[in-house]
Image (cartoon, rainbow, N blue to C red; front, side):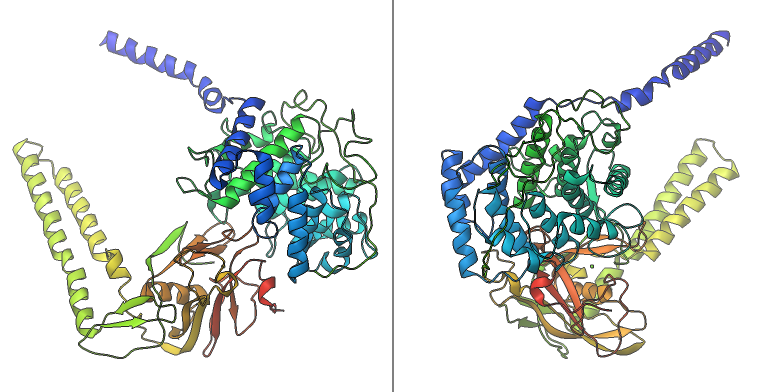
Length: 621
């Protein structure tokens, strides 16, 4: 007995002695070397060269990047310019040709094209000419991209860098972030806003205080793996935007405690999405994603520029300016955001980059909140259908305008399926009862005959039976059965359609119908309290349309966002692309899980490439 007591005491002493070491072990941070980041950058470049069949970066610039100017390669061109590749003449010529033959209606797109020309060293008056008609015309992002152009020394009659900065500061939300809409900051929008404000950090206390609040906002929302999530969904792009932002401020994420969680920094947060071929996925265990890859690329380049004491990513070296990129900046070290961690030695030589000397032009150039939790993937097919069918006793195949077939289950089959679905429950209950009887017999034979054992067994069996009775396990085929949801207290009817006209013909994806119609206008009965999301979910179940949503009504902010419909996802066609919804031609200010429907409402789910501005949206007042 004494030996057992001694053993217990010694074990307890060892546990208590080791306990203080456990947090240190968990939080041990493995610092990334510059060489490791260079390997990540090189892996992306090698992947892209292999993908497009180019033998060198110069060949890539003159070939695929030039061919994709204005549509798909602009961020690669800008990033390569910031890596020291100054001959972007083929890209510049191609982009100018694109702008002369296309009417670019989106303000943010015009601003991004202007940055592309700037990165190519162009002296086109387009860069300055579009500012008056673009800044502030498309929400916070048009202010942000406009400030980037002004930070590079360009001017326009209506705005200055100071006035645009003031407008951006006025849009900061209570939590320290910025967002396209709503009352709570968004990771991506906040990080992109900080990127634009970074060169102006020392201009005034108002700017520095706003940026410091934003840095705190970003720090507080970093996850234990070093990354970030948007609308409840961890992804590579959000983390890439934060790395670009903090690098613009001269913050080295390898040493700053604010951006190290559980031993993982921002580089870890992005690297977890790296694929074996060097490219990056949007989500963990996903496939190659172009947006994730290019954003990872330029965030690593932004980080490397910070370590070399160069300007932020979007203060462009190759701009046609009277002032060289580093003029007045060499040797002036500044670590923005007043690091709270051990970063005093991590940022030596990091320069604080001011806006460049003015360059102006003289001519005009024409140029979703839901009731489910987490990330839910709804649907196994890509079918759509139109109209309402009333049949009995037969199975009918209906073909939509997109030539996709869905089978509508009729009443006779419906009864068969319901019977089949429910028939498993008696058998499951019998199995539970039988198992409980066997266990009770074993307990009796072993002599453990205390009534407490049998009471516990009875409670466990009862709980198992309750779970069986209260759940309804269905296969995907049963869930997507083609059945319209039966509603007992119908108060009216609404119509809903799902379209992706903006990308029809732009991809060979089998999920994008030639005419852009995924679901033609279709009637749905509604009950009191039904929301836009409820009807979208019903349509997905009835017509086999895949839907993926993020967030939930029970999350911290009650925010749900529709990230994908029919396997067409946000960011698939640019960093401002995704799904939006209209009701009666109006873009609501509420998310789809909060919009309660009324009789006669007309719902449209539409894919946008420009945050809705390519759809001529009318916003709810």
